[in-house]
Length: 208
Image (tube, rainbow, N blue to C red):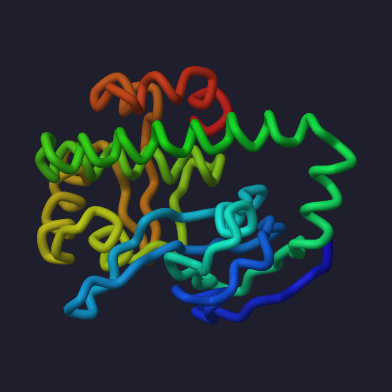
């Protein structure tokens, strides 16, 4: 893998680009997003140190179908298609690992669709905060503005701000500049439960 440094807000790739590389984050963060026909950005996912992204296009050979932007200065390991194909030939077990990884992603996306259809914002927001907390393995969610959270939830910044302040008033979280701290993760998970609880068993000890 080759090293690459990406500056704040720089595009790693955009929709329609050739999908000839995949990436692993060494430090920093990346947001994966798409735009509506009216030009509004909708954030599909956030990736942090240790996460990989961009592999779907490398597998099926089709152009990129979303956009990836650096959140702050980000250091990447880059794997090109020729190296990726050689890896798959020489290590057949990778195919099984890729299948399991993609199945987990499909499950997560299906859960997000169901939540977006059935749950109000006041329930979806804390679930998202828990998801971001687990991905960073820290007690604080940093580098995300209220506008970023709104884009991830398909909501307005004003409504997200209102719900964040209510969570803070109730003592669940503490707001800072572009950061959110969950005060007691095990209790937080017990309250907002569902998929968050199932995926967080054992994660609470690491992050709480």
